Image (cartoon, rainbow, N blue to C red; front, side):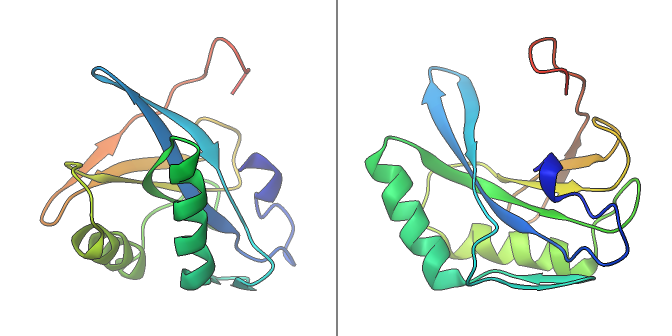
Amino acid sequence: MSKHQQRDRHSPEAGGQLFASFNDQVVVVEEATGPRSSDRRFRDLFIPNRRDEQNEIYEMHRKGLHFVGDWHTHPEPIPSASRSDLDSIKEIFIKSKHYLNGFLMIIVGTDDFPSALRVSLHGATAELKLVPTASKHSGH
């Protein structure tokens, strides 16, 4: 995700999907996909190709990974969620077939990690903001 940060004024938004493995009570995000060549990308807008996203979900499921949410960039240092972002993740949660209590939404701003990350968990009616911290292993 960091390689797609919109650090210059010509960079379009980017995004993709988040896939995780489940082990007892632990959820580990293993893959962050995208952006795909079929997505529509603009400076202040990212429109994923939903058919390609669905195919990606099927492919990852065959690998034992489960769709757990989406990520995308914003051209601001510390990102905030737009009404469109909130409506989109809620719609995806409601329309998807799953057994999860919520989907993750990560918005990547232009600041350094972890302050550039807005991470939240979304259900049908509620949002829980999460606080990312620097990893001891990756430096991010």
